Length: 538
Image (cartoon, rainbow, N blue to C red; front, side):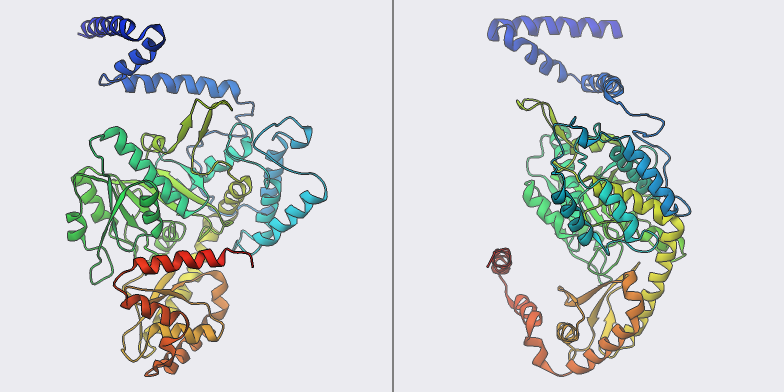
């Protein structure tokens, strides 16, 4: 049977080749034949297998590094049970740095643009100044700063030139995947933050749909109204329609309406772990069943909680299943620069397999400057952030993350229980980690006015809407100030009770105006004008 198929395929190729030669001449025959052959079912799979073999051979040829020291794809790297001592990490870092190409030798002609002498020192000091205070717990500023200095000018756009960065990135992805119950097939990439992770995920699934379902010309994404605005940004950037669905009385997605929003144009379902607004994890296992029913991929945005929920669950708190244990979950995003306690500009985007991740990449083979490809949205990828992300996970260790989670949950629980006892205030829903939202349950207490009073006393409050409330993310620097915060909040609620004066001041007045305006496009115009004004040199 196989021999017969080979004869049929060969005969078809001969006929097509002769026909194309007569019409296009020799120059156009090869490309056209390849295109026709790839239209055959299964041919692309064969080509992929052959390409994979050739790529592995190619990487072995150009990889000058010691594979025993710098692994290209560690399959069993996990966050260490105990945080690695700082001095040990620094020794390991310096050993890896010593095997990198030395820029001062003048042998690198791309990717890195530096200046020697006093200017270099000035840039380094400025970087250190504004990277202070970004880490917490075991991973202190000195260690992260050391990593940042060492790799401050290295560029991960080409993973073969800087093998240490390749090791750091692959191992950071592997550690994060393991933490989120991913198996050895889970792959990923470090990005510049949650927004880039989300944008890349949307771009990936759009391109996947273009290839697998070319009949879908108006792709749609279904997501609860509480998903991060980066999904809306991604939809606008990549010409995808986002269909928002409402919440139920518990501030979770209304699953009936969520399911009803799915159409033949739907290419992706989205859920949050947790959603930022109220700190509540969406029912991802139930959304996963909907995804299976319709044969759709499911992305879980755990940018906010990915590096906190696993430890909260290990502490014994009730956390809905949210990660790769849900079979329908095809990708996840988790920010190291949030509760992973790494430098700002560090996020991980994970895919269940490379069959999905391959749609993320961009490749262009016709540029006079050479063959070009990039894994993410950015071209230049700062090495310092990749190195410090690796350092953060290894320095903290499971024990460090667990200690932080325990302390922060104790503080969170104290805050929530006290707030519930403040007359006129309450917590929205049932938050699952170190985050919650405060609202008013008394018409005489305007929660936005409470924020104005708090601001007048030096507290910076995060205002939210639909419904009006205040967001709190509890972090290590809040622990010693918990009692002062709760006392100030109690006093603020008492101050505004029945007093409408504060409801017209500052942002309270702005949010009050927004709530009354039926045409939100005017508010969008206002926000755009705001940025135009702020980002202007006076």
